[in-house]
Length: 175
Image (tube, rainbow, N blue to C red; front, side):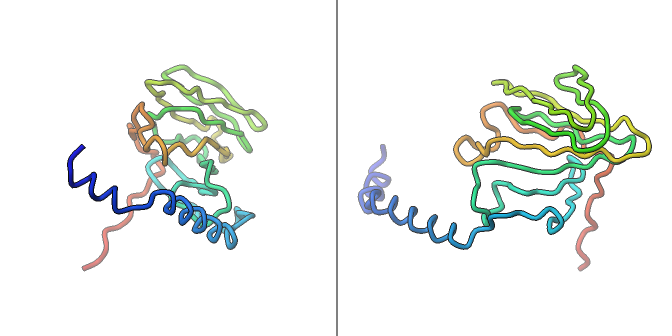
């Protein structure tokens, strides 16, 4: 360990830092949102598709931050982006029918189904497809928020392989 780091660490009472962190967390939870209302969430158009974020590592005003939770819509006949990530996600199909490719293997689903995306050390490649040409498919997805302790890569990589065809890149700001 270098001397500069040792001296810097010696200047901090780390036990008191835990107590300071505890107090800050308690204060944050006093005013935290207990009920996240879906009709108050914006529909985000991103490279993965059309999503509403209920819980996300960057959303800090909710009472709980141990999960990542979102709603995704796939327009008729369309698909999500293709993503490599660790897995370990559970999806509830709220509306529609389609399929999910997990490492190239097709898994059909319809409204009322639950899809369990496997957790693999080397990660998985996933893409969701809406098979219906007239109805929007909707699913809710939840996974543990490992981002804070393991990093976004979570040991297996986090790569956007392909954008959803529904993604609309924002216009550049005017000068």
